[in-house]
Image 1 (spheres, helix red, strand yellow):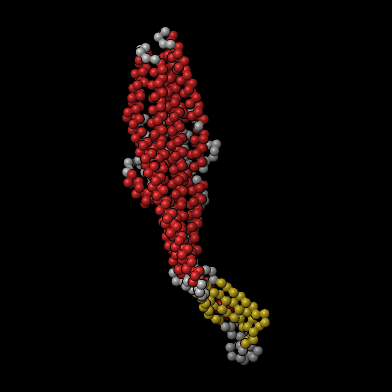
Image 2 (tube, rainbow, N blue to C red; image 1 turned 90 degrees about the vertical axis):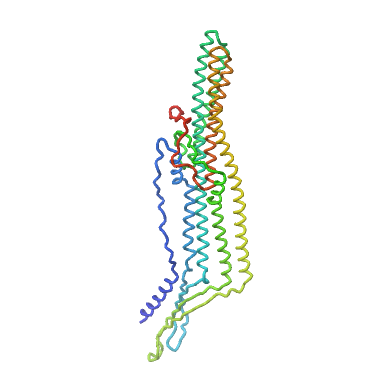
Length: 456
């Protein structure tokens, strides 16, 4: 008899517990084991970006924070846990139908209407903000990879150009020796050539010693071991289709992750204001209570041993209105702060974009200037100076000056190309958009660098 009564209470408990269960499906967490792509013998910039996206520890941390914020949505939309209460009568209460021995109760709280939805909306907005944190971390990581890659590629170009000029000066030194032996050139020409060779050799050694610290930046972004040697980049990638400054500013307003994050935080703050208003309404508590009752002293008593089941309802009484109004004011001030943060961030990002666009356009202008005017003129000047020196019409110093000028222009052109790539990477980070085409081709002036010629 008692077992059947307990079974009845068990069914009631299960029903109440079911009422408190959340109906939001939770996805299984993603696996931690990721297969990294092979970088290969000649990895491209895109290969490095894919590898960094899968292997960078900071980006993984941002991803996990985003996933944790998504899980928080389930908590926010769920009812509080039901509460089970057990009481034992130390002194049994004797009633007409028998002594009361123990009492069991199960209660479930229900927030005021709309509260769970608002909590879910606030948590969803926080999760959306966490996703934008992840997107920002990815954009910053991609910028780090591109910036380091262009610096590494420029170093390789410097080595290539310096080696070519060393070969050129070596040839000039041979010409000076021949002319000195023939008596048609002074000994100072030979000494000048040797001094120039010594200067170029010192520059070459300095550039070779820079390989490890420059590559270390790229390896840090890729989360690679410090002792791993990265091959020289084969070429500097070119930019994608042209775009205007107006387009870039529109992309900034529409796609910058930091601005999107603050917009989601403003949405969360708006939900928090409404939630603060809900605090002035009572929460409802529903429950059921079961009292275990023994048999009456008189077995013939009607309802002897009958166990009472009591339905309960209770509410809290929100009478401290000043506290709730203060909570609403607090939430409103937090939203105003987020909106002002977004305004200030937008102004700062617009200034950063304006400077990046200027530097990008300036690098493009320099590339055009060096390629179409200065480099052809410097090559022509060196050719004329060499012919005149061999004909005895000019000094060796003039020939060396022409060679130096060509070296400076070649290095400046490659520096401008690297600057353009780095500034484009900065613009991509700011606007949250890839601006390069899928197929990137090196310029005709770019010469591939093999490990043998680059000092690998």
